[in-house]
Length: 282
Image (cartoon, rainbow, N blue to C red; front, side, top):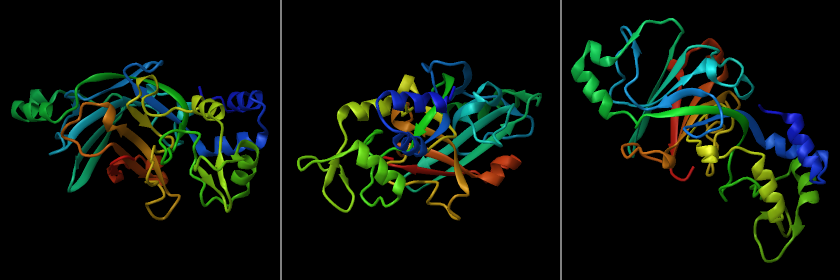
């Protein structure tokens, strides 16, 4: 459960103000993390040769990444417009020369069958282009975009000018000549390790509970923001992301893969318009 009031109370309990709570919660967004060891209900699986609706061919030459049971996902971690039922199937082709993807929504009650029942040769090829099958369990939580330092708490604010960030830093940070972490038109700033660890505990990051996949929430993007990189800015949101360094995916290039969709396309169920982006080092 994404208990925003609970997070706010926890921040107050550390002796920090509402200004800090507003700043930190504004950097995060509810999402759903998934992995074999996540503390939550079963909600799909990575890899394997999945069942496909009649008349739907295995996407060539893409790799099958995951199947997510929409009805099993905690709704408080999902964007409005995300399907309430059925399965979302995620495919990707990621190599050094480019990337491609396909996302298929299979509504509940749709007749499906193993690929092998229709085309044994295609089934053999599909098995070769699938991740190793693992169960995915899900829980909702706050998700953080990431920083060049790699974890929450050390936020890149070198060019920060907004009042909320500056107000929070004035409370959290102290000038320090030995550590270059923050610079806001003046000396470097340092936030104590205790505060960094506390804020990090409030946020779901790659690897938490064994999380390897995420639906909705913030893209974990260290070098650039894949949502903001697409125009018009503000119209694209994260549909899902795969932390490639946490799974056995030797045929896929990159460290993180993001499936992105326009808000209006998500609301209309136009998953054929999903685009994919990948990055080395986020």
